[in-house]
Amino acid sequence: MMMLQERETRIGPTKGLGRCAARFDNEWFRAWIISDPREGFKVDVFYVDYGNMARVNKGETSLTLPDAWELPVNLYPFRLAENSDPVSKDMESKLVRLNVTRVGIDETGYLSEATLNEVLS
Image (cartoon, rainbow, N blue to C red; front, side, top):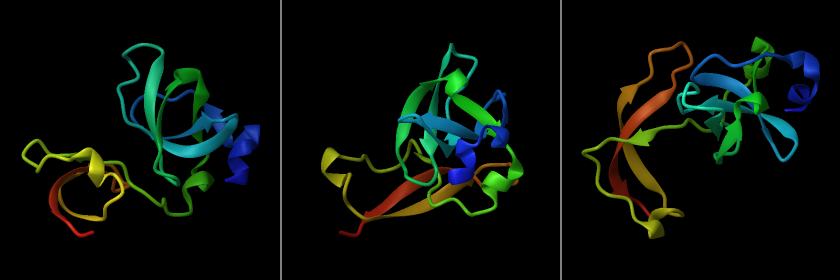
């Protein structure tokens, strides 16, 4: 996302959960804030084009111009429902099938909760 590196595309401080630009290794990327930013000066972000997560200072997140979100995201953050099968360490590199049990309520279609259905490989 070359345009996120330009200061003009980052338009101000974030105000809660949801879409933003977040810094990683001194570059800006599209991300979701997935923790409550009112809990101190750090937030947890999920980078929607790469799938990694990080805890960053709130000052390393920013609202963006809508143009930054014209391309669809590659990955959606979600959590496993409490009644889901447990996940083990060896499943990190496995392909799994999930059932979506709850979808976020905003216009972006944020996937918020799923249950683990089966391990495919």
